[in-house]
Image 1 (cartoon, rainbow, N blue to C red):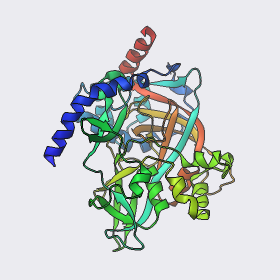
Image 2: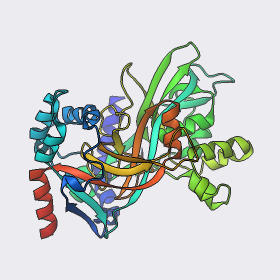
Image 3: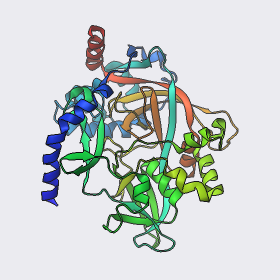
Image 4: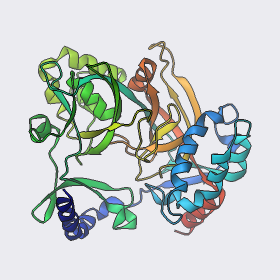
Length: 404
């Protein structure tokens, strides 16, 4: 195994430069992206949010940053600076007690920056959750849908390691000869492209449940022997995510105003003969790993997510670990006909996702359970956000933007 890994690394050295050159156009800064400093009083609901509920998420990110070299940049876009830029504020966050005034600390140490694109401040915010499946370690007539581990030949390339202006860009594939080529897509994998290689982590009983697990990225599985195990994202095949809900809208199968995860499930249940074809329009395929008992689902920032306080963002535009003030709304879990409820709270950017693309775009992690599923499945609401940077870092960012 080690020899094969070294072979792949050697080939990557040969193919990295052409890959970077081919993706040069992808690295351009989006026109109009800007950050405007605002006072905390301008943040909707700033005075009413219970900031202490966000402290666990803040601590997880700070603990991760404190263990990194000071000169290392935060994962994602460069606006988050380096780990060292966060050292002082993280020291306070990690030592904060239940009686500390977190609001006063943020007001003294952080600068909120409104995010806009060409003058537009609003974007789309959705939700995700930790799903529940039924499974077994052994394949059977009932448990016939595999969850796969990451294949050893699958290579993930962080293009930002080669060029600073490609930070946040990743591709994946497999080495073939002296080239990195695309990996199998969903249709090929579900048709048996990697069968017979002992890559099955476990087996579940429902292909639709498995598909939504791929979208959510993590879940819990009730095993046939009574155990409850947790599975989390390990890797992805490198193909772009395609929203099957958008496909149903385009084909006139579900009205745009009625689209939700629940509507997709209903359509799949009503059209079993067309279900596989629809699922395969999303070429993206996710590989999983078992999580240790007690671990929460892990986000792309490699920290356990916090329900209601962790936010998935597009790392091409935002940095992971950065606090975000979100002002949006979410569905009432108890009444599908009710007006959306206001959502004004402190979040932490701790995850990414194949469907999370855009400067003003986010995905709220709602946790586990029926209520989390109900909210996440129906959430597709307009909103806006402000990033919060330590004041010296914010001043440097604004100065750089003004000079550039």
